[in-house]
Image (cartoon, rainbow, N blue to C red; front, top):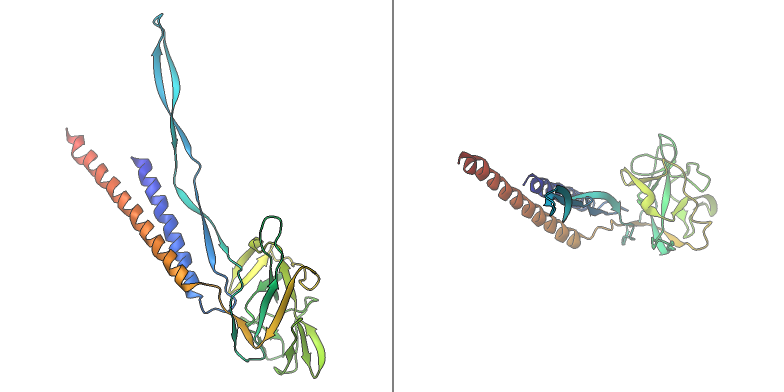
Length: 275
């Protein structure tokens, strides 16, 4: 009986976490470069139930043995939340400081995971961060920064300083002013983007802030930068709403099971227990 409480409660907690994940995805549907989270739900290890039996031999000797009853599941849990790095649609803004990454071809590794590319961003606490959000701006000193004031880095890992916002970004990442190459945007390639960890504000980290290899040096990677565009969030509103409603329904089903167990326990204690 008590095991049933634990099963239903674990199901409710799991669905609550999934609803929170879907809500967060919908809240970021208009965030440039946002990558929607997806959940992995797993069951706890199954338990093998056995019962203790006694046997009496012809000689009258009594022995005990364990007989298997069968396996029983012990509940479910959300193992992890993993972003999906599918390319988002490109939205034309016509702003010089907006730059979008366009995945033309990304290689797939032996595990069937498709790689992805990112802008490199300085981490004020040390190391490097990554983002797909190309909504850049120039600070008071002419440094190219993201919306949170973090420096955008070039291929050498240095901040990019410009004289004005009148510049051109070529398809292969060069920033030009006055017809001259000033710097090249640092674009990193993650062979397995699932190894990246979200660090907030649309930023990712790899291996505690270590640097990913350059995408320019990988002959299998094909991409282009588009100035005056922003990559939209890859959240599918219709699919997310459908999945969130399904999670609500599953939560309610587990809730009703829990209430049924509670009524059974109430009868066992207050009615059967009096007899």
